[in-house]
Length: 143
Image (cartoon, rainbow, N blue to C red; front, side, top):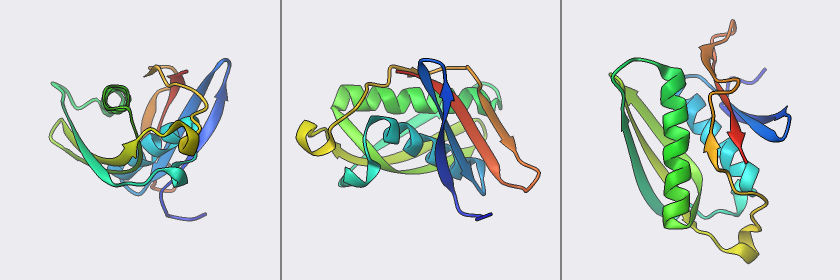
């Protein structure tokens, strides 16, 4: 098994699950955000030309809740800015997350978005270390 970060989708009734896998929680979060983009369109079609920074602070050290907050913040930025993102750099330090998200404005002909992601949910939510030592971050998206 590769030790590189990666993402995947998993079935969940009418919605879709996203899962990111990485060497650190930060890498797993970034891969989960990339999986979310891949629900909308092929991330390879998105030119990472503009950077948007997302910052989240929590009162607790709940990584599960932080994942949902992060994905919902990215969804908000996509909606407000009419952008799609294809590259994510995440840092987590003392209940705070900072993410740099690179992307470009939506071009319906180029990107051909398949669905609109409405939100990240607490369904099948998990951020945990595997027996192999990698981190997994996952949840179900409301589409």
